Image (cartoon, rainbow over the protein chains, first blue to last red):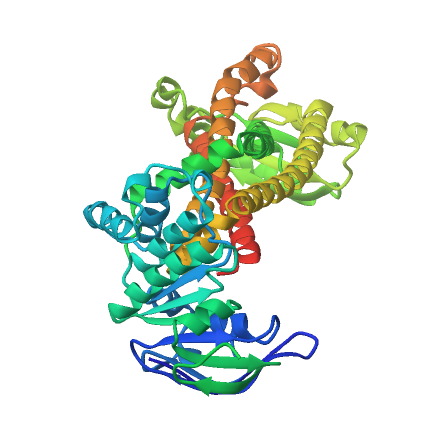
Length: 225
Length: 298
């Protein structure tokens, strides 16, 4: 599903964010990306939906070399990749259901489809009763659920999560992880960058560790360290 | 991907409301600059029309009697040809005079229908070597007594003054209009930039979930176009309203014949209006286009 071949990313000023990284992730896998701040986790994720371009190397998503994707096709790539962030990136002036509907609206889904899918996905993430609330009326965990609902409402092949539990307390984090696990079980490939030792050690999945941009460990059912 | 009309309309209207004051500033700047452009064009057309016969350095015109004999015409012609003071001259026969007459009075069909080429005087339009009033006077006087000559008309100082003045005024107004139009482009650019800034979170989300570039850009482009078009629309309305006042300010035609038929008529003004509208669209699209390509990295 995702394949990196000798990928190197150098930012301005010779900052090497990723060095000769080669990774192969199959459909339906759940992968933790661990490593210190600045080890290249976020760059790894940003390369996958072409927010950044690799300096060297090739990246395949769903069998296609995304380096050869013309720029007008990038949006189509992104429709197959859901994204979740530490800071949620919800729109504060829209309600929960409007936030989720927005993601469908801007890719031109018909109104009937939006009307049917938004309540369904909100039920799935357990927020059916908060549809008309605004994001700042929700707890952090609930806001992250909204953002997961938005990322998943379009049924993407891949879900990228950049420290989704970074702002949440341990109990709430467990709830979020259960949700991500459920999404993973529907066949969606999940790649999650995290600092959360507890989570990695309890919910054992494949672990890829980065250090100064290099893949130093790739372990099935691994632990944090 | 088809872009949904209701979505685009809603987004554009929201943007316009959010930045109401600055939108107003752009619209008013477009309006003022295009009003100036329109007025300058109008003035230029008016002066050209009123002084049509006096273009290209023509200083006096010898009008012959409509029934002047070929010999009489030939006499005047050879006199002009042999005069050392003549730089050049043109002969306007009755048919050409009729065409000119029709052009000048095209708004008054009564007049053009009742007049035929046979009643109009043929004329010689003379460009003398020496342009000073006294020299022109000296050169033209002998023609007054020539057989077959109806009258000799000189370009007055006023005519020349009007031509010169209008030339300067149009140039000045054109310059100010260009400066103002540049200001308008920059203002629109900034309005769009601010609109994009205030919606940067939404734009970020749109990019993440895979909205196409055109989907993200179109509402902003429309916002710029809207500002240009509304400004141009106001300018056209103002010109239409202003035209009768302008006509009233002019001295009455019987006292000051130069200004008869000065105010440009329908088709001329239509071209002016279209031009003003076109420039408005261009200014709006240009401002928004630059803003979108510079500040919307999709």
